[in-house]
Amino acid sequence: MTRLELAILPDGRILLAGYYYHRSQLFLRYLPDGTPDESFGKRGRTQHDFAEADKRQLDLILLEDGGFLSLTPQAVYAFQEDGTEDDSFGGGDGRVTTNQPGMRNVAAAFVVDASGESSLREPPTPGTTTLL
Image (cartoon, rainbow, N blue to C red):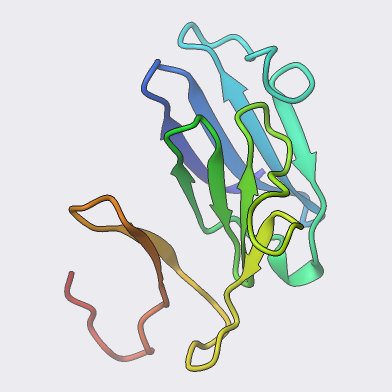
């Protein structure tokens, strides 16, 4: 796995996300004691094959219902708590593309404001400084 993202769930479980041999996204979830979470995918592991441009994991955000969102260069994918794709997200396919007019077809990170609303942030233009 390369480019790992890590999230600690409120109950202490650990969610790892990354891409696996440039072929697919891999999600792993562990219990607080470090053993695989058997309620997630198969033995704590789930793998999802996406479009070629979407192989790189960029960011991960946990949802209140136990699911999570995965940000790739071209889309945001939604998953349920058990690691299956959430088909209620987006157009019924579990994803929303980030190549919107005015964006450079690559989102860089989720940003959550003080009210809990989330949005996407595009990467800074080379040679500029971004102040947060």
